[in-house]
Length: 304
Ligand code: BG6
Image (cartoon, rainbow, N blue to C red; front, side, top):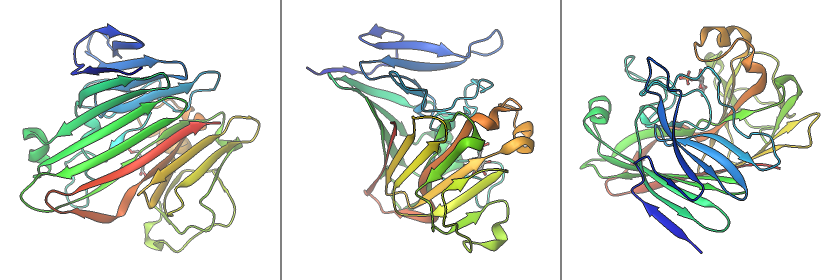
């Protein structure tokens, strides 16, 4: 049996769904979030950025990493989960005053519907251009994120060009994974894929490695890879992480290590040990979307 709940922006409580406020303190109103507990998993999703903050399959360790020092002040990026980077990844190529990784992760999204079935919950969030987005990026768009929460975490992101002219953008799912320890973790699936080291960009995509990736220093790499199938293996654990993507020819591997972490105000000094970003997107070749066209990006994450 399926139940569909629509226009869920109030504080109400229905089957397996709980509307809460996260990070509320005397000086900060915090962030509205939705907590879901169903037969397969528990998850927390922020309205800001339609950002999945937590996902945990029952009897498994948490899949996603969320910094305990995250800033939950509205309009600030939340450090962890799966932020959406749109309409650009990283620093804007020409403007220095606009937000890093675009504005989508800093804006409140609209929860359009929640569908509950025996197997999972499906949430649909949307973001349309408004005065604030147009002051940063002068284009009319409709963005939608469909989040399916069951044994797996499925994310479908789409953008429709509702402007009078074509527009250019890039996009990434900026997934933060929770790991037992970075020194005992490897990433499989990026062997022999050329990468750009963002710490030494002058070398371009001239490097590749033939073995699974192990991280022992600050790492910030963009891979060119169309496999769409990656695995995070933890040496002493039976539990591994699977990443499957489509339409995402770039994989970004990021761990800030000791020094960079100490400069980020929303991470504790040793938290680089327990987090790893393996992000999926299309960030190297700018995407031109024609008037009326739609483009989709898909990501499935699971712990096995
Ligand atoms: C990664 C980038 O995706 O995000 C890094 O490759 C960046 O260069 C990191 O430092 C975090 O970005 P931010 O804006 O969330 O601090």
